[in-house]
Length: 320
Image (spheres, rainbow, N blue to C red):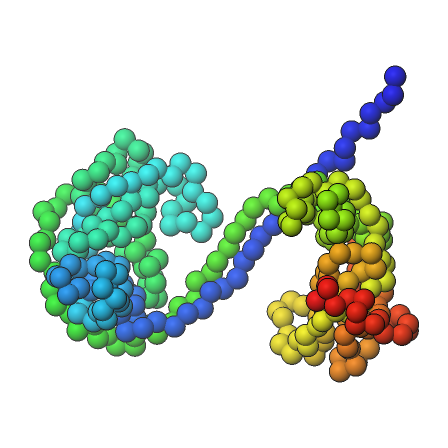
């Protein structure tokens, strides 16, 4: 009886994608966010008389420019809701709460925010709520800490507002963050395990015979699985490149430097890599290069010239 070796476990690792998103504000958004700082909720009136909250600068139906600002109430009515039993970091409340769409008094559209309630049984469509303002406000949607239940009669008419405030907010920085567990799949797991052994392994399509590096598990051209592993390189050819002149945050590489497409010997397409060991202005198409491995030996830190004659253009023109 032949023993069967189980396949290696697919790699998994936590991954965080995080960056600050900076944007400038037009006159309508500036007035809206500055108003929140001053405990005032503004909407904008369309040509048909509808009041939109949050306000937009162009009519979503006609694309007409909108500038007719109005003040709406800080109380409103829940139009729909969903219970959030396990808040995530960065959400408005640390305890379970309801996501609600609230049509503020005087508005014709609803604003999405959090409702502080003791449980889902305390939330219903049609319930009356009011804004709970944050203690410290800076001109952001978070100036509304959340909504809270409140018995009140609706205020029907919005009031005209010129949108003028002292020290208006003209731009915002919104942190974007995504936390998840990444699994590269079987094909790239094999690729990464080979890199840890200082080998570069691709997979060949059984139909068109193209060798994909890094492997994708299937040929995007033929649509068939690629299971035949092929070791390529380690040397390769620069097919095209760019000169980087802007230093990336937390990247300990002096500019300018060269980032290139490198077709490893035996591969059917080029992969990305940094070129080192040569002045940036001497990098060229056809340059023959080899990997210089990272200190821990898990991946090529960069590629350097091999000293071989440049490759003939016809040998790599299909890999540009």
